Image (tube, rainbow, N blue to C red):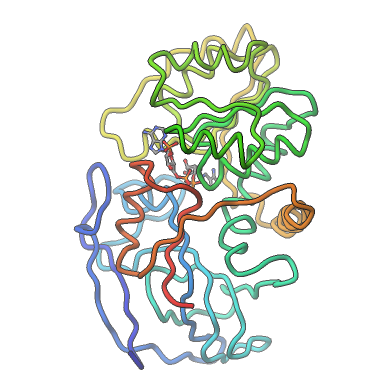
Length: 335
Ligand SMILES: NC(=O)c1ccc[n+]([C@@H]2O[C@H](COP(=O)([O-])OP(=O)(O)OC[C@H]3O[C@@H](n4cnc5c(N)ncnc54)[C@H](OP(=O)(O)O)[C@@H]3O)[C@@H](O)[C@H]2O)c1
């Protein structure tokens, strides 16, 4: 449709999981770019668990999305009209485009893709926020060293896949935790994880981790939190590092899990640390360069799970919390 911006705005705040009922679809006229702005056509949207946090009453470290506001989202877009120096129609860019087909954004908030590093799909996956998060989480917070044992939860997801492969590249023994046999086979057969634990098939996750990591865990890269964190804490080695990247089991949950095993950190002289990828903004180029080189050398890959149509973005957000995504979840809006 010409001169039409399709967009999804926040209609109501969810309790529990978010779904299509919490968003409203609208078609509004395209906003013509002013000096210093550009009109974009959205191609791909990244769907991230953090989005569920952004639409809650008190998101914490980021401002919440207000009712009636376009849903916030990062994505890849094509420049349609530019009134920003250095950008021309046809350029491929990344930006916080939001859940809309034709955003008009200030040029200062838009970054041109370096296609020498990877394709637009690489830029939303491996070279996007998920890959960069895994890079800094594993190397800076986890401080992984060759020969160490690394356990990754949410291992078949966007961040987890990359975190585990970084561990393998750095000569660590890597064990992944994921839901279901297919995801576990993917980790060991396609991504080179040393072992995988299907947490849905284990009555006692701590015991399953002990079997897979008989000498204990040096680094636990946690995307899940709750009972998974407790089970990992029970298996730490002396001097272990616990990287709190995410806590998806708790994000949309109304009954929060009280972690019981924190006391074990004392005797193990272990460290537990959370982090936010945005703090490494000045070093994103370093991470992307390293990830692109590893990809070109055939040492790292990322499976995407692509669903079509902007209207399905809310459904995609729910999929993350039901474990229905088999890789980094992306909505294709146009091509
Ligand atoms: N700290 C940061 O700066 C930062 C930046 C980006 C992302 N993150 C965090 O990184 C984590 C992964 O994000 P992502 O974008 O890569 O998502 P993702 O892992 O691709 O998708 C979420 C996965 O979480 C698992 N999951 C959902 N509910 C669960 C539950 N109750 N218990 C156990 N597993 C559950 C599901 O896998 P299974 O089928 O295996 O259950 C699902 O596929 C999230 O916690 C996110 O918030 C943090």
